[in-house]
Image (cartoon, rainbow, N blue to C red; front, top):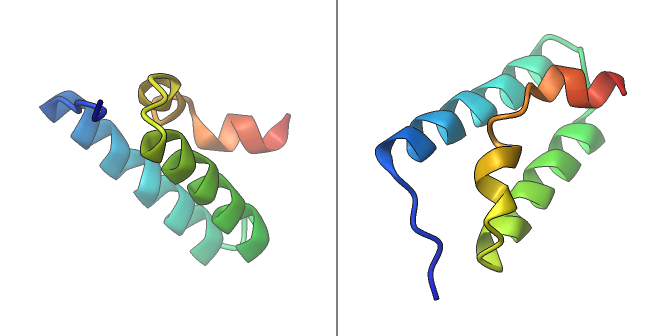
Length: 66
């Protein structure tokens, strides 16, 4: 089964990726943290984990501060 993404999911994914890239560019997170977060999301999507859709909607900066 393939994970189905709506237009809203694609929009959320764009915001999520941009947030990570911007945070790395601005020195708010390390390259390792950026890679790790992206790898987590990509792996979840690759195994059709529905939690991926929620994960990309979480405020990434809040996740990193926890």
